[in-house]
Image: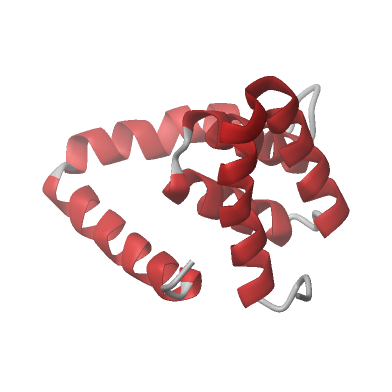
Length: 117
């Protein structure tokens, strides 16, 4: 992990904004009604949905998704223990490949001083 994951996150969100400007109709549809339908209170609370999304992101190997879902889970009050428990579910399904993706989450939490070396 040579580069700062927090710098990567900043660049990621900047590029995300650029792509939303380039595809406004898709951005409005996907990040409007679709996200609102998924990430609203229901049988599961929103924090739980974000933790599930984190496990799915790990399985998919989507670095941007892992960073985003970890950040959003933290904003909703998720603890490191809850985040790593969600990670453990992904590892139970995906083995060492998923575990290697959990390192992105650990690095993100470490750089944010949420966990220590």
